[in-house]
Image 1 (cartoon, rainbow, N blue to C red):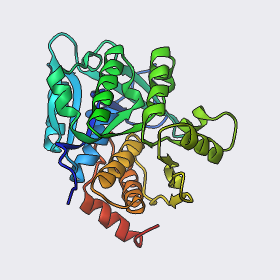
Image 2: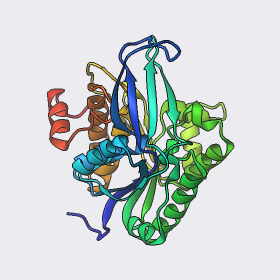
Image 3: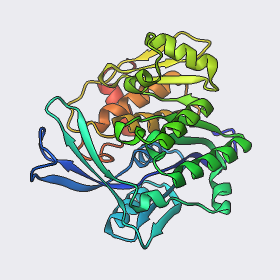
Length: 323
């Protein structure tokens, strides 16, 4: 039973995209090739889908075009039970898009259309902001801090969530394509300063390092920033949670056959925050998050691997329970 009366467990905001996925590893962008899609996508949308499928009350603020790609995305969010009252439809700009290719070594390259799409037209009126601010957690993705309008809206929403007693989680999701913009870089650093729960990958943490070992970077962040929980995502090597008053908690990854790594970290975060919002222990939340990240990579398409709690419990049980 939830002890609070917030309208939403989790609110998130940001880019909504139609994504196209290269069919084979090594496929290039500068020669003709086949792509699968469109798939509904956007890092915060993947996060929201995973959290909602686990039973969290989730609301989303975003914008899509008045086109078929916008229909595709809204249909998926609605089917997952996500509140889309703050998702606008822009008649003048198309839905944002992303194309992803996979290198032979497994790394990915993206081509985004964000700045000249409806994704960059994100706007919510004052009444909408007040409604969204009635939440336990505001979750922010670094990839969503890619336009002046999105940065301004998330700043305003974060201020209101704080005033209503909510907390902020932040996944920096740092991408070279976006961090070249000074405004995005500054906004990411602001959210790092202001968050309660920080969810970096190993690459994100290295970006924040002063050249010291990982453990020292984490200790410095916990000491100098507001955050009280850091969960370090280590992909196939599991995850590690840090607080200022406990030894690190480590959870191993679940071995699966990988088909598409896109969205694994977002599903990890969605499961983690949904479990914490439901009052689960940190250890149980980490276990569910690890299972969600593992399940995500077994499906092609960024949101196709999102899973409900029964699926995660089955995956955990198939590997002997806690890891």
